[in-house]
Structures are given as C-alpha cells and as structure tokens.
Amino acid sequence: MLLEIVSPEATLFSSEVDSVVVPGINGEFQMLNNHAPIISLLSSGTIKINTHTQSHLVFDELHASVIPHNDDNKVLTVKINSGTVEMKDNKVIVLAD
Image 1 (tube, rainbow, N blue to C red):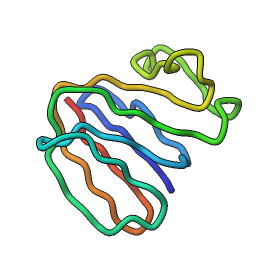
Image 2 (cartoon, rainbow, N blue to C red; image 1 turned 90 degrees about the vertical axis):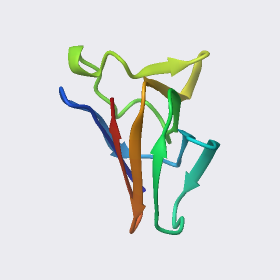
Image 3 (tube, rainbow, N blue to C red; image 1 turned 30 degrees about the horizontal axis):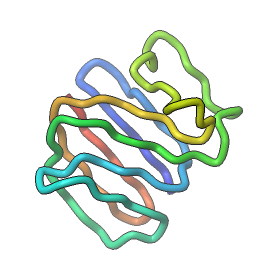
C-alpha cells in the first residue's frame, strides 16, 4: 500500500509500505494492505512505518524527522503532535502537524 505523510511544510514520506501504526485519539491502531476505508483523528505520538527495506528510500533535510527505529532496518518512525489519517483503496494519507 502507498503511504504519504504530509506536513504544512513538506511531504515527509511517500513510499510503498507493508503496514503503518498511527496514534489514534482512542489508542494506537495498525493498517495493513486492503484495510477497510477509514478516517480518524490522530493524537500526539509516533507513527511507525514497516517497510520492505530502506534501500529504496532517500533521506534528505526535508525527511530528517523520519528516523530508523531501534536498529531495525525495516521500521521507521515519525513523531507528530496531531493530525488526520485517511485510508482508502490501499492508499494512506496522513496530514500531520
């Protein structure tokens, strides 16, 4: 599935991923490929991105907030203050603040 994380300043992340865990207002939840359509508010916390591999990802100064999680080369994290997530047709869009 395609994941895009967008902030007011820039697109922080855009790539195919295996799954994503987001901090919903009622707790964390995970979305996998073919997840039912959903729209939810997000609270302060960490988005955890599970990728196939990091070898195809490019990190530059705009993507500095996307960091590897605990030496695991397949999990990336992004800290957010709040936001909204929409999942539809295997595309996840996170509008993060």
